[in-house]
Amino acid sequence: ADPDPLQDFCVADMKATPPVSGFPCKPADMVAAADFISDALLRPGNTDNVFKSAVTQGNAVTFPGLNTLGIALNRVDFAVAGLNPPHSHPRATEAGFVLEGKFLIGFVTSNNTLFSNVVHPGQMFVFPRGLVHFQRNIGKGKGLILTAFNSQNAGVDIIPTTLFASNPPIPDFVLSQTFQINDKLVEEIRGGLANA
Ligand code: GLV
Ligand code: MN
Image (cartoon, rainbow, N blue to C red; front, side, top):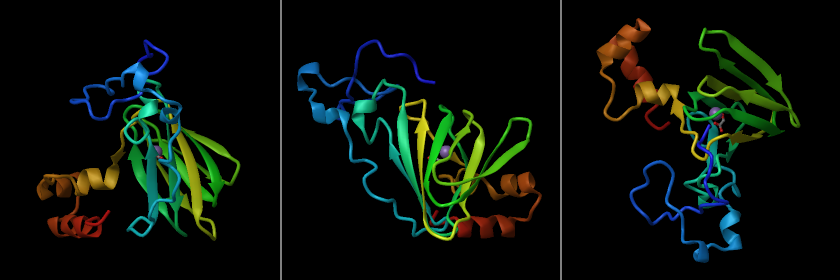
């Protein structure tokens, strides 16, 4: 979904400011082999949180060699019963590969149809660009999924935190009317997501 590059590579100069759309290139004579590998996904993310999951991003920000190349990779770690909550990527389609665990996954189309599957290690899946999707570990042990994006920086809108933990907050009366609930319940939901 990103524009085509106009050169072989454009390793991001992360010290240059300001990034407008992507990052400016490091001078070519400063580029070395090590710019094209990354340890960004080396370690499992910390799943000790309300959702019991952790997304670790290998995008143009964490791996500057990806700048202008139109792809990125995440690892998503799950504890038992971990959930990657409903979210969407404004700038990319997502393809995934299950390495460990058993998952209930799904996405909802723009006309409100849910397409849901159970996937096992070795299986791939795809979530079309911009559509809301989730992954829930329903296996007995921990889980690990690798996800790929056709953008160097797919972006992410996480539905629960976008709505209930924005900064500054969306006013209670907007959320209570949206979900047809009272303000007390809005506050209760905010409380539950305080550390999300
Ligand atoms: C998984 O859905 C991810 O966005 O990495
Ligand atoms: Mn995703």
